Image (cartoon, rainbow, N blue to C red; front, top):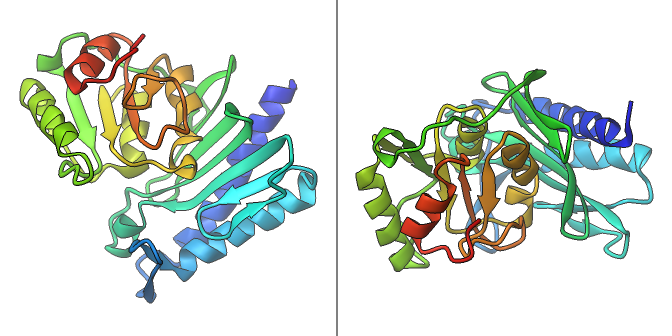
Length: 259
């Protein structure tokens, strides 16, 4: 087993462990708290992240950890694990199964491995640079759809309240597409990676939202950038597409520097 394969395996294992813990609380009528940024959080989020942290501390004690719920540990470490125990908490608390657990390992801004686990629907994606993208252990690729008129385009929330001009660009894009849908969160990126959709966009993404998704999209043959067209998980937002529509979509959305 190569080092990259080992890191993929580790990312997948910790995502499964944390996600299964979260699943134990799903549809259980748990209390919902509000964080300082106005977003919801539950005991499921916190318990799942602590499970992941405990697992990583036992096996990678020199690596840093950055998680949505408990912040950063060992910020000076050359490598850090980036965790989102429940991506789609609003979805989770409403009993909708399209939420996931995201785990990535980064060295600086270079992502070494990423995993996205969707325990309520039994789907796991894992990828690492040069190793391919695997969906439930089967290698997958993005679609080859090359016309917007045949494309499925997705967004978590089409309101785009922070940047209204992006919302209008999205709505123009959606009008050209065959199908447009929201309520995406990380599940939308799974659909792009597995060829069931062609485009997924978000105006706001934290590092823990995006880091696992970048290698998944890229190793499936797609393109992942921020809204400036830069290939990064740390741009604060994201556009994921298949390769065939990469330039067209970014031009429509006003993302400069698209490849």
